[in-house]
Amino acid sequence: MKKKFTLKNIGLALLVVFIVMQAFRIEKSNPNTDPANDFIIINQPSVEVVTILKGACYDCHSNNVTYPWYTNIAPFSWWIKDHVNDGRDELNFSEWKTYSLRRMDKKMKEAVEMVDEDEMPMYSYTIMHKNATLTKEQKALLLAFFSSLRTGESDKAKE
Ligand code: HEC
Image (cartoon, rainbow, N blue to C red; front, side):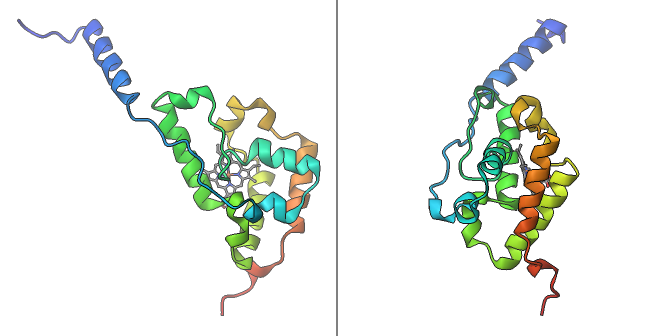
C-alpha cells in the first residue's frame, strides 16, 4: 500500500512526536542551599522590595523556584528550564554570599540596567505572571535598592 502524506497522517505524526516529547521531563528539584547565603537575608531590603524580588526575580535567579502546571508540558518545560538555568548562571540570589565583592557590584550594576530598561523581569515571564509586571513605584524602589548596594568595586581597573 502506498503511504500518503495526507493532512491526517501529518497530524498523527505530530501528535506522536508531542506525546514522545512528554517523556523528557525537566528537573524541578531546587538545589539545597544555605539560607544564610541569600541576598535578602544578607541585605535586609524593605518588605516591599522583598515582595518584588520574590515575585519577579526569584523564579529564575534563585534556588527557590516554583514551577506552575504548564511547566509540565514539553516543549515549554524545556524552554522555561533553560531560562532558569541561564538566569541562575548569570545571577543566583541564593548564593549571594559566595560572590566576590567585585562580582556583587557588577551584578548590581547590571541589575540596575536590566530593570531600568524593562528587560527584567523577562517579558515572557510577565505574560504568565501578571503580578510580576513592575509598577512605576516598584521599579523605582528596586532601582534605588540595587543602586544603594553598589560599591564601585567592578569599575576599578583590574590590577
Ligand atoms: C523568566 C526568568 C527570569 C526572570 C523572572 C528574571 N530574569 Fe534576569 N535573567 C534571566 C536570563 C535567562 C538571563 C540571562 C540571559 C539574558 O541576559 O537575557 C538573565 C539575566 C539577568 C542579569 C544579567 C544581565 C547581564 O547584563 O548579563 C541580571 C542582572 C538580571 N537578569 C536581573 C534580574 C532581575 C533584577 C529580575 C527581577 C526584577 C530578573 N532578572 C527576572 C531570566 C530571568
